[in-house]
Image (cartoon, rainbow, N blue to C red; front, side):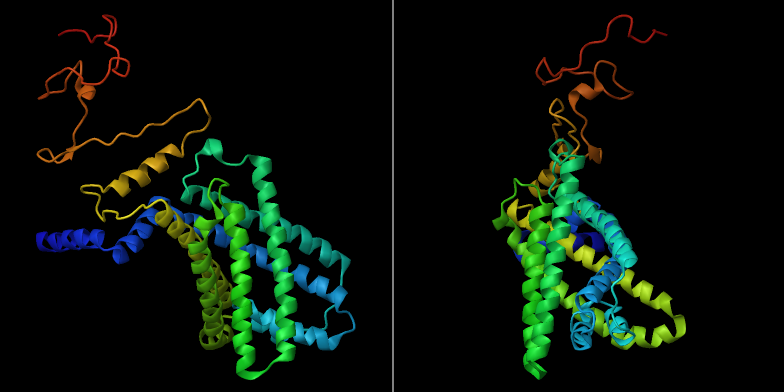
Length: 365
């Protein structure tokens, strides 16, 4: 066991000297410190439930716009709808003529708005944690929902533009040129989408220039996820759906949304680690690296709730002989525990705990 610990300690020292390893490990450490996995799960939860009212809203609007234009409806189904992961091919295959419906429009609009706000609010909360924005500086109830609503509008417009552009590309090209054009267009849409996400969900104190590494990584990773989603449907869910029916589709959608949410949160973590230089990190925290202390102090500062509250973080040296953190002098005075000796505190008088009065002293035996 000691041999394994020595090997891990050597690797820890090695990775701290090499940025190619230190940066990814620092991102993983910060992701864990922030509890970002749970926040990604919450984003995926709301994202899953937002899919169905959005599909209802989209098909209803297209039913009004493309009523009586069967060729245009076929182009939309065969191009834009197939980009929807897991269920896009099913929608494109099992389709009927689009028809507009007032009831469908109302239900889809309300459902998409409520579920969409859930996604954007969960994303905003995740970004505030990733960037360690103190509670006192986070947007209030109205401002946070206004920012979320702006993001919903931006994403909706981008989706309409993407649908129209994909239809044009599908109608004008064919073969390999269609594939290349589709990938390029999809990447451009992804960049615009994540630019809106990162800019609107991140605190205004962070410059847009600092967001570009995460935007680029998220855009490429999202394109890969879309491709993998189509591959997963073609090879795995196609046979499973015959056996398990809708259950396999639901599980596939949930997994895809969860992976997508983790990609977005990881991209934000990369931005913070790079711009705030939160690397190298110690894998075991013994002893903690300067970046460890900086990251943990930022998390503690997040708990400041108003301008009258200030949280200061102090790191005490490790007592190697005892094997636990050395207690500050004032922690053992004026009544030491067994085996300890009271000693004068080196802290300034204004920060030193007050001496107990006679009434507070414990009764003598």
